[in-house]
Length: 71
Image (tube, rainbow, N blue to C red; front, side):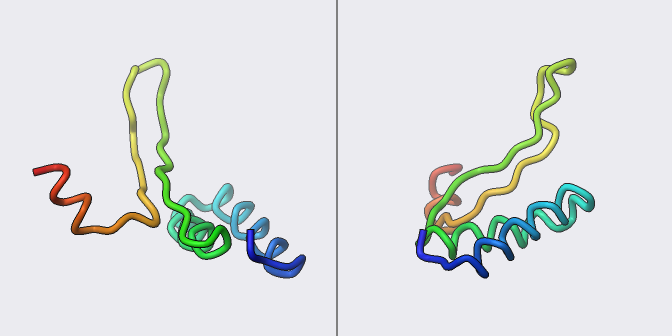
């Protein structure tokens, strides 16, 4: 992680804000990618009662690679 205490604190604050307002998760994912030197991943919300993924967001992926993979 290439951040100092201030940047880490800002990241934690973004995560708490997203916990209160899910619309903020995109900003969290973008910040994670920057803080962890181009990290990539997937955040998904899974409902165990329905047995399905309700929503997901990718971050740090090359959009052209993802599109080619799906095709």
